Length: 230
Figure 1: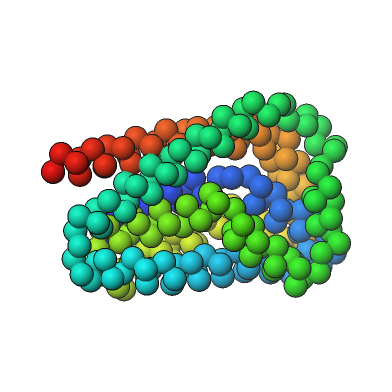
Figure 2 (figure 1 turned 120 degrees about the vertical axis):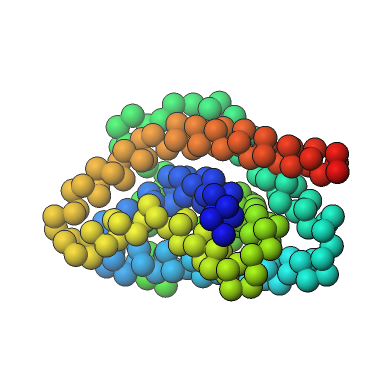
């Protein structure tokens, strides 16, 4: 199981390090009823991950049960190759897009609209962030592919997927907890963190996309080549 977690860790990190998700949470925390909105947003996102896990776990499970080893061994490398290509394309597009807003004084219009959201709309936004982002679908499918390829068994597989789902929230849980415990004291640090992420969003996304894109492309292609040799 530890070997599967090591294989799963890069997927968790790549899905976690996109700054737009924590930026939204930090902005929601600064709005009226911010704690409730932030929790609702994260709950919506996690719910989609869990539903995806159930649906696609059921899709991949028959291949494991039928012991179609050839098809099963192709799932992981194929998904990692697709994920690598997707991240590389995203990274190149981000680098070519232009500079960051150095002072963070001109946020996009959608960021300004976050403060007017209700708790229900925040939950819906969490759902949409995961549901409409192609790369998030590929992250989820890649995680499921890695887990199913290792054939850890039902209980261990569910545990590993829950670990993946919780791992993708590692950047947003600490600020939510800090705000819940000490809203006044944490307000200024959270505001500075949000401003820093917003200013350097392009560089962070481009760097993460290129580094992990190359890694996943290498892992996927070597896996496909190894399968072909066999």
